Image 1: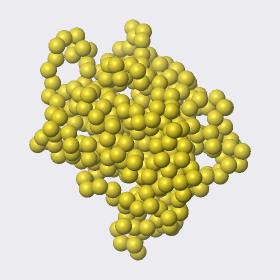
Image 2: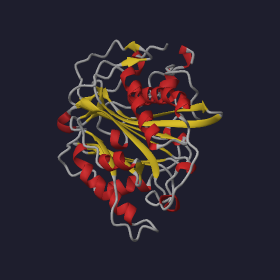
Image 3: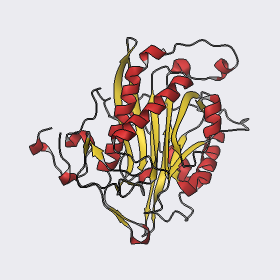
Image 4: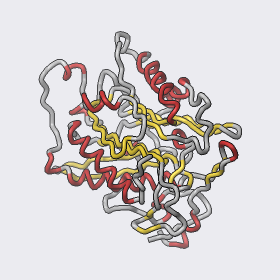
Length: 349
């Protein structure tokens, strides 16, 4: 975009500011909801002087997730975190409930919210076991994390609020109180369109950024950032409509860390770096009928995975930048103040 047309006084996404990581085209919304059927919902808690937290829910499709499970893969770069449900996800390679992002001390309440919501869905009357997947980052610098927020009801509301529309970014939902590179972090998303094996697919990424390092924008060190703030965590959720097995979804999730590294992440001892990938393709969905018998299905082969890997790297990098650029300066817990990235100082490529 020409410099004269960039309004640097308001929060804008990376592409509106002239930054477009990578080569692949984006989807129409440039977000995870470009993958058909994926829904995202937020509950944002910005109350008084101390509460700066929330919930973000990601639903792989609009049907009964427990009955029609989706294949999934998980990658862990540094495991300093509390990702509930990870062992069953690794063991079975599937997601059977909404994915929840929130703060560290709310993980237990988030599990209960997923349990209550899922058990109440028509068709789940006889369900007696459920694997809730809940990711977290610690928002205690801006939020009174010892307060019992968000509640179970807030978690259920985030699920109920989930839509296929454009995703709100910055200091919303689970990103309300997060910090990245010493600046206000938050929720960010991006997508890519990929050609592989003669077909066109969408791949979308959503992040909860709360980590440190020395920020790099479009491959260059950003002059206002220092490496003083190195600890923290990030949750990365990737969706695609490409027909992938849980094995190749794990490989795809691992490539998200390439995008994380491009932003200047410190990948420190105190960071929790998690990436979860799932496929919405109906042909690989694990329906009750398919779980009762030997099933054959179409799958993108290993030799066609490289374009998907590139898309994961590019979309992750841009989602992180969007989480920063869309976040606003905030004052929170104990009068802590976290300023946003200064839009006026951003340099176009």
